[in-house]
Length: 361
Ligand code: SF4
Image (cartoon, rainbow, N blue to C red; front, side):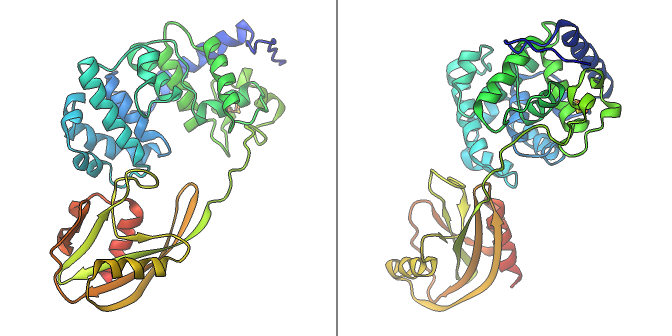
């Protein structure tokens, strides 16, 4: 089978109709039963799509159910406190996602009376909504013919059409969206987009695509030419930079000292142990204790852990610092908390790991 793409990257019409028909039939029959597919509520589609960024479906399901139970409507979420919202996200990682979602939901409540906008220009202006999420919400909840191109979709298109473009660069996404403009059927844009994502997630997987069970194998160039292992093309991401970090577990009696991380940057606004990650973390901590004027009874590095983020790899030493007195003063965004109530706060995984290690010592 010779796939013909003209200069506008328009697949032949017979191939278009085969892909549409086969994919929609397959999706109708085999789609997974997922909680956000129970209805087409744009708010639930939105929450699920944000949760699913960088996170596996099975991990997301319980979080999604708990989140929707706690904040059943957009207004409930808009009226919730930041701490409550982050607490419901605790453990999912990439916390800027939930901060952006919360802030965008407040804007929808204020500006659009709680109705998620159904126009691409308006929805794209909301915080945290990029072209993929906009396409997913508009097509699934409002049946608009808008492409939703994520990593799964790029892999499927690369293989079906034998495209060697680097899927890590923005121009390739544009090209894939143009293909979507041609392929997405007017009568079922939401199902079609979801079918493509589902195919990428369950059949056309990165390392072992199951072409025998694939509904579009008859029109797939990678299948025809055995190119599955070569496609898609993706430039290797740089390895995360190693960083030496020191956490301070500062205790006074039964209380532990916690701080909120800065509003910008890694793990922005999350509760944490005091963290030192400059050139000489140990000296940085010495200086920190000096400026506080606390009387230190003892200090000792008690544990070492490591944690990998997308761009950084933290090698962490955790130092236990016992103070003589019970300090009563706290600055803004700081708190002494009884060790037994520490999990009232929402912590990113790296700090949960550190707290759990230190509680066991
Ligand atoms: S035939 Fe194979 S490579 Fe082609 S889309 Fe299907 S699973 Fe992917």
